[in-house]
Length: 271
Image (cartoon, rainbow, N blue to C red):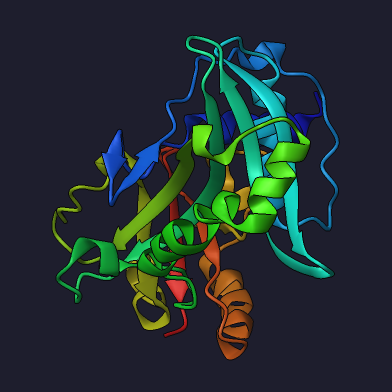
């Protein structure tokens, strides 16, 4: 496996589910044990969206375990020439031969502690992506798709019945808490998903951060844990780079390396 695909797969497998068992009326997929060394090499197209890259990672991982059989992925459901949506994965649970329609999601959410209800606190780095809207999409669109006339027909072509499907999601996430906040309760969400913090430009532009080294990861690298072999820069040069992002209303992720070798991940937000 190429170096980057290995890192991406390892990071995906180590990312925690946003909740366990069933919450919000949605059942979380129970991931089987995967031996990373057994996962075969695969190519990751550079221009592919991160979500689709995660699908390739999931597919490669599922091919190296025995708990589930991967039947098919990305089943497009159409009405005449209009695409209604697609089913991410169809799996067969080998323990009981049951069928699973699985929707895969990998998200980065910032916790806005000015909002009281946990599921409304989770926002994307640019505040365009909200956890509660993703929940609604899962329940109202993606999980209803197999039961449409067109969805049933697509499954019947594969000798499968929609009414036999279990609906599950593999919803992995990295969460980032406000820099100045005390401990934040996020139940019923998974506390293990907390991966770093977020702060505003004026908070980062202070002496508190001037003694450390930094790296601006690409979107693909957001998934990874920080590591040493990247081009680290000082705070002054990073501020110049971040200021350009702020002008474009883009909130970058930053890796920070402290003098003691400790690494941190955080977002600097434009809003």
